[in-house]
Length: 438
Image (cartoon, rainbow, N blue to C red; front, side):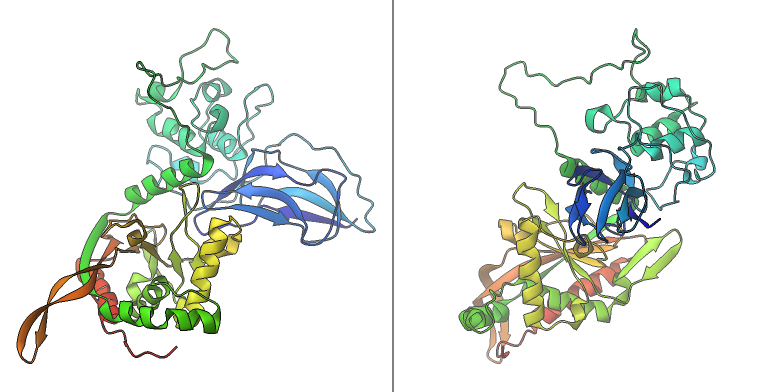
């Protein structure tokens, strides 16, 4: 019997699960190689999952809106010559085991949560409420009864209990605070109270519910601040040579290569050079270990039309010429705005650059993109008077100036390393060759 398992793909280093948005194909449908089977979403990107083979959808193991861990089988495809029986979509069942995945720090009160692979199944068949496999495993590991589980307030869509909800309940369980995480006992044991809705006395207040991506970005940002003690350093940089050079060659550059050159690829080039000078910026932290990354993969924060942010990654940025960086920056930015990035293009970053100057801001204190340990913000370029030393003495002249700010993880990056790295980026920008050929 020739059958192929379709698994939930890995969407990034820090991504451990994804939400099924839509099944494009249903049980019994024919699929071609690389034809889209379903659409999924994480806090980083919405993406399509293609078929790895040609065949027929025999089984669909998870439903729309289900949250599925990376690596789990989500569908079965029967290939040509198979005698597999096409079955209707089954209900979501408790998986036999859960792969241990690194996650945010868990309070000491819940040590058993990190090892749920050998726990017994929790029977939720009598409940009208949906529980993800991960939540059920944690409940079983912590001996949480169905009665308790039914009354944990869920912060997810439609009141769904998330991993964060159940871990918060576990951490406070037994110390008198667990009741803060559950709703009041309703008259009917199977029905929970409706969530409270914000009201406006004047009628002039609009309540806007966060979309899925905004909720996940919020969780990621809070996790980053809780994980890394942030420190931010600043330098002011004279980029007059860069501004004059770009103004003089931008029309010729576009005519010759078909690409508009912005300041971003020049910033990325300087960052890549500085990382080679200070490689301990290009690391991540796992427990008490510092993981040094030899690849220089620079993420560039891009604003989406929705107002959310996404961080596509320029892989091996230190191996690309300025033309190569320009093409990569333009391509990733354009496809990010069109929501056409591939999963591989938003993962593997080792350092992030965000250009707050795009919005007219002169500086910023960005939050680190975990599991990285540093992020650079480039402020707006402003023409202002500056003091220059000449053979005839100091003179005040108009120069194009900008601020760079570096937020870094003080667990592993001290002020000397963070400040020296930031100053080196500034030096590379100030030493830019105004006569550089294209």
